[in-house]
Image (cartoon, rainbow, N blue to C red; front, side, top):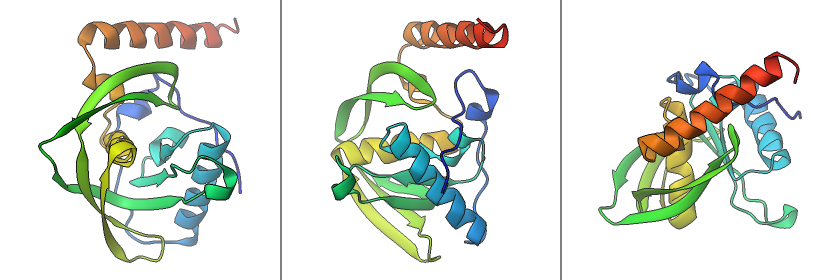
Length: 173
C-alpha cells in the first residue's frame, strides 16, 4: 500500500462535495488501504478520501491507540440517520489543517448507515470520540471543515494563516 499526499487548507478541493461510491471495486479497496496507511502515517484517527485528493464518499476511521489495537473501519457513502439531542464537546484537529486545534460542539451520539468493503449495508451507533470523528469525516464529504463550526473570528484567523503558508510554499520560502 502507499502513503498518499494530504490536501492542505486553503486547497479548494476541501470545500467540494464528494461523489457517492457506486460499486465496490478493487480500486476502491486500494484507495481505502492507502487511506489507512496515510492516516496511520500522519498520524490521525480519521480520514476522508477528499483529503488525499479523491472526491469520493470514502472514510477511514481507527481509534486504536497502538499498532496491536488497530480496529480500522472503512465507511463507503456514510450518512447520519439519527443524532441525539445531547451535545458533546471535543477538541478537534484535522490532517488537512495541521497543528490547529479548537473545541467543537456536536451531537454526542449518532447512528450512521454505510456500505462496507464487501458491499454490505451496515449501521452503527457511535458516541464519544467515535461520534465526533465520524461526524468530522462526514462533514469533509460535504465540503465542510471543523473550522466551519467555530467562531468566524477564529476561522478567519486560521484560514489567513494557511493562505499565507501556501503563498510562502509557492515562493519556495
